[in-house]
Length: 483
Ligand code: NAD
Picture 1: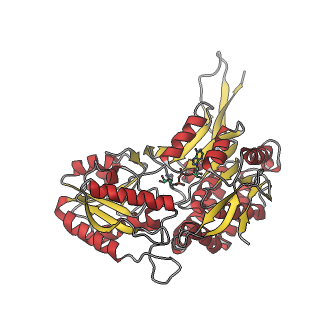
Picture 2: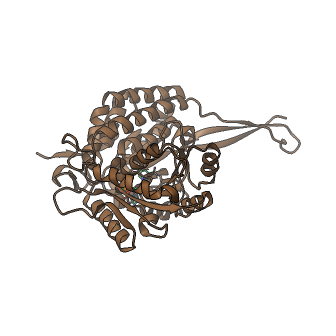
Picture 3: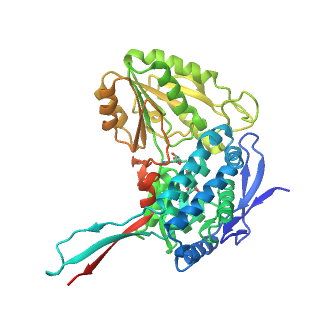
């Protein structure tokens, strides 16, 4: 019998109010391996009511920062205990090798929970000197209060890690949550919710409603008792969310896509830059928001670099990640494979030089070969639009000013990488980047203590780090007259 996944509401597994189901398909063999509840607005209302009750006099509202921190530490231990299970659930759902989530995503999720356990007790207010009130002295201070019920909307590309970024920070701040996982990857979020219950979080603090974005996600955005939407996903869905939450003055954080540049100067350590660019392009089949998919290379080394990157791409073994020796699995879904193929065709039509890979050959599974384009311009669609697949576009530059101008000439502003051995150049170029995060001689360093987020079409707000925990609080001012 096919496995059927239900919502997790107020500590219990609950099916959809209309019994609707959605199918979960293995991207390697295109077969259904499970179904999940296709949530309704009624399911969302039920979950929000449970989360709201915990804030309004429920057991959760009575816990102090130390107690919340203790629960977060327990949760971190449980995620560590079940790390391989969680990594395998996410890997199977999108067809990636479990090695990447085991080595990167799960440890990062645990680190976020541990860091937040400490922050839960550090969300302090301030004492602010003032000029008094009508000639009378006053004492003014601020307190940090939890924003309220959070609607956490998550994509499919790294579900456990991204869910934990949100969960760690919002629980540290004392909020409660309804998580809406992606249609493709609900299983790790449901397992995580069970672990929250095992850790001792009161029922109703963490809820999961599975289903479609336009139904469950939208119902969360519209619900009057949801105080903030914390969204990670595409700019298209981000815009749809803004249209709903804007008139409601709901708080919102949007972690959206990117078209991140990797700038390779002619003084870069060639092999390090080559390996870094390949990782930035091909990790998770290129389905990474910070994928370094625009590779800007100094004219003097461009041909050599492009040829070496194309050789690396051509050597990648693509196939079922469960088989030995396979380095790259399929992309997550059919629509994603079609999207990547469409961009590859556009790149060819626009006149870029195809050095490796190309449009997928017909067959079972959503496979795409690592693809490298050279001699591209920054105006081509393969340089401007997020492909979200293993496709790299190489563009040449001559001067530092040109490199900076090309890097910043983008609708996106999530991340950038600078490859150089010149210290002054590294700092100057890093400071000139119009993005949320820059890696110098390292692609997209992730750390639980670092804030993460973008500019322009890459989104609004930051999550991660202490900044992330603060973003789930409101600062209230209290002034006391001291006659
Ligand atoms: P998506 O926007 O299609 O879906 C993301 C989530 O939003 C899903 O849970 C979906 O059901 C929900 N959703 C869709 N439409 C909605 C609506 N109208 N209202 C409310 N919710 C809605 O994105 P995806 O394909 O799952 O993920 C890929 C995108 O996510 C890429 O653009 C990628 O760059 C971005 N991403 C960004 C970051 C970051 O940190 N900036 C991290 C990972 C992924």
